[in-house]
Amino acid sequence: MIRRFPPSAAAPSGYDTVQDEGVAITQRAKVNFIGATVTAADDSVNTRTNVTLDAVPTSRTITTSTGLSGGGDLSADRTLTVTADSTVQKVAARLNSTGSDTGTRRRINFIEGQDIGLTLSDDSGDNELDLTIATVTVKDYGAVGDGSTDDTAAIQSALNAIPVVGASGLTRVFFPRGVYKITGELTISNGAIIQGAGQSGTIIRTNHSTAHMFNCSTQERLRFADLRLDGATLVTKTGGSGIRLTSAAGSGTASPIIERCAIIGFNRNIDLVASGLAVIRDNYIVTPIANGVQIYIENTLSPDSGDHQIYGNVIDAGAVTTAIGIDQKSSGGVKFFGNKVLGGAVGYRLDFQADTSILLIHSNSIENQSSYGIHLTSSTVGPGFSQVSILGNQMASTLSTHAIYTDVTGGVNPYMLILIDISHNLIYLAANKTGINLTAGDIGNISDNIFVGDTGNTAISIGANATNWNVGANVYRSIATPLSVSAASSGNYTFMGDVGIGTVSVAASALLDLTSTTKALVIPRMTTTQRDAISTPIAGMLVYNTSTAVVNFYNGSAWGAV
Image 1 (spheres, one colour):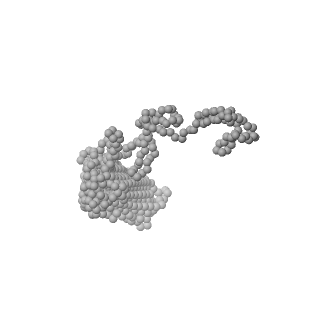
Image 2: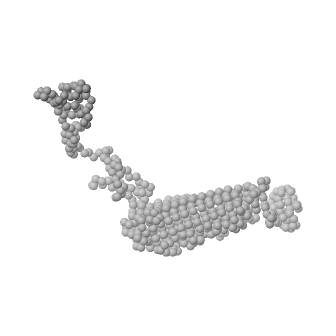
Image 3: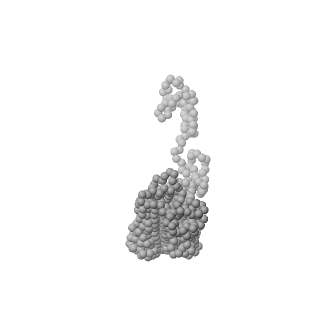
């Protein structure tokens, strides 16, 4: 038994006070022994009971065998069965050869990214799963990228290894960081992703004066990204394109993408000979050769196929004043927006060579062209183009004759360019320049534009072959002639809003306010025979009769002298 002492009494000789971490615990009437095997024995010689506690082991041996025996405690050595169970096994992955391991998880999912092919196969012989990523590196085929070695053959070998696009997606042909010299044309016949390490990381230079750099003849998808294509450093080009997209069948290369590239110094930096649904975005396209083109748009296989999107690019002709920014011959549905177009002869030229429709030019900055900011024309007899929208652009024609110009040549029907909307543009004019000059086009609208001039400017000029236009409310500042309409022009014209000529402060009660101390109003001049030939005159008409040298007016039933 356990002897009990009064709380205030000290234990007599031969008895120990139970302690915990060297501190006496509170005295109780009973002590319970928990968590160990307890053996009690009567020690009559010393008049006491001895309690023995078995020690708890600090370690046990676990071996791999057929099972875990003996219960769940560690009172004896145990054996453990290891079973392959996919629901509980965990793996870790290393992101690259020098990186650190990820946290352990029960599985790794390989997710196929856009246009990246993954193939997973079971290698039962090695008890492994093999993951294949469809990627080709040009250095694997012998390209050096040191700027002096001719890498043409090695790169072409890599391009020749591109398989036909299948269920695994596009193959990526990667150009590691370096400068790759080529001496001829590179051809691509299957869809792929051609990618480098950025505009300053991967540079491909040609020393051939007329060859294309990449000549692509495929209907499959293509993507060019993060490259610098240089046609200017090693040679002065006289022909050839940076990227040329074409095909011998269908409607051309399907859905190509050119993004984040710098393309410099070619006859045509980007050449869409036959393609559809192209996306050209976020590129730096500069300095083509003299009379060259930054982006050429045509579809020789299906003229109405197009629907290209061209946005976010810097298109800079530099000192090449004869270059064309965009030269479009066909391909309907082009959307050109959010670009910066600098210099050259023309910013955007639509020279339609086949029947098609829809061109949207909006929210661009088009500046400092030597001839025209936007030129709508056709040099081929027969085709027509309809539905052109020029909206929300900032245009500074400090050098050009006209910011926006429409014309026809070669006997083309001027009315084949129809349905044109020119609205919400901000147009800055240098001295003696014209903002919008229409010498062709039928059915259109000009409204809500702001014209800022210098001296001798005409904001809007409508020629003899431009018919059925509505001229709505626009803002004119320092503009000598807001609107000029040719006397030979036919059709209907509406000029909305109060008009001031020679003044920027139109009288509140005036529909037309003419202000000048050096010029006068000139009304139509004609002979009596010409006056009488006016069909269905209305009361209030005025003409100057050159046969009688007097002003005539029509009173509703007859002409008379004022």
